[in-house]
View 1: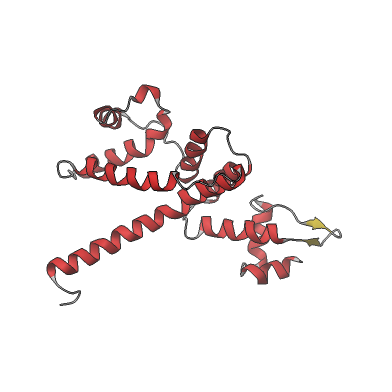
View 2 (view 1 turned 120 degrees about the vertical axis):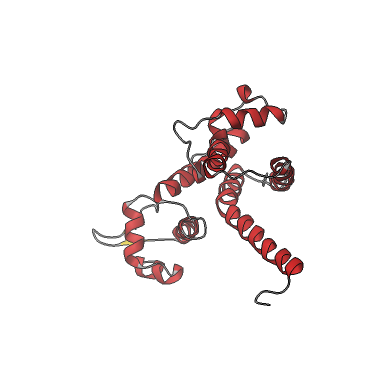
Length: 204
């Protein structure tokens, strides 16, 4: 298909497709002349993936590049794949103070010295944000959150495809990027539902 047909198939404007081509987010088509190229179903799939990562996934162009790199050139070890998927969503934060995060992990029986410290950045930054705002969680809140997140993670890891490495990589990376907004949306829905149950219907 020509680029105009690719645009109609995906609903992405031609100008945007050309931008993605220049940014190497989308592979080049097969040249048929100096100004024309043909595109296939792999371009349709890739384009839809890029749009999902930027739209619902909320990733920047650089983050999309990291996500696609993890899909195109995955690490061999499953653990490294999980780390790469997480880094695609939020890269390591230079200079993040891990003191509080490491103390919390140690209290949970995790030895920070034996783990990849860059994977602690998100938790460290989040805890610092709470401290900076002067917001104190109720006692046991973090342990409660961790227990439920562990159950969610177990459910997801148990369902990583084993048919091929490519499918496993795609599942982990896209599952990391695209499911996190779903989890946040469900949390907010639950807040509203429980508030209505406890305090009455909305607008009452």
